[in-house]
Structure formats: C-alpha cells, structure tokens
Image 1 (spheres, helix red, strand yellow):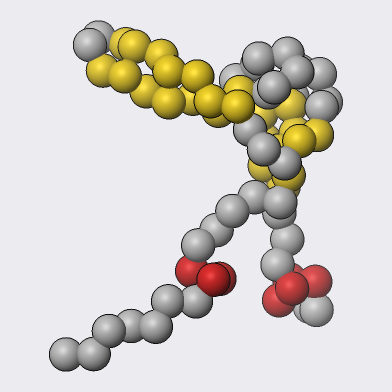
Image 2 (cartoon, rainbow, N blue to C red; image 1 turned 90 degrees about the vertical axis):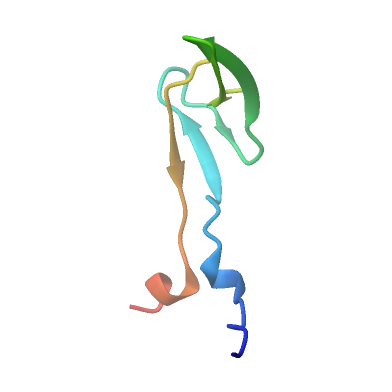
Length: 66
C-alpha cells in the first residue's frame, strides 16, 4: 500500500475573513469557546467587534487563470 502524497492544495484556508457587521478585514481570526448543553464549541469571531457573523474570501491560482 502506498501513501498518497499530500499537496498544499488539499488543505483549504481562507485568504481573508470579512466581518458582516463592521466590514473589518482580517487574516487571523480570534476564537472563543461557547458551551451549549454541556458541549464546548470553538467559534470564529471578528477581533475588532467580536461578532460571529463573518464570511471568508479566498482565491486559488487555478481560479485566477480561468
């Protein structure tokens, strides 16, 4: 059995996060822990306003060349 070679394109990471509330653009998100019914969740938040309402934006070289 041979191991599959892992490419960096196999791991998707956003280029930038954008806050839907304050429109702040940032490349490193802040994380908070929220407990719900005894389960702990890690949530991504805007470092400026602490909103959980964020979107991601990314592009790949393959998309750019199309």
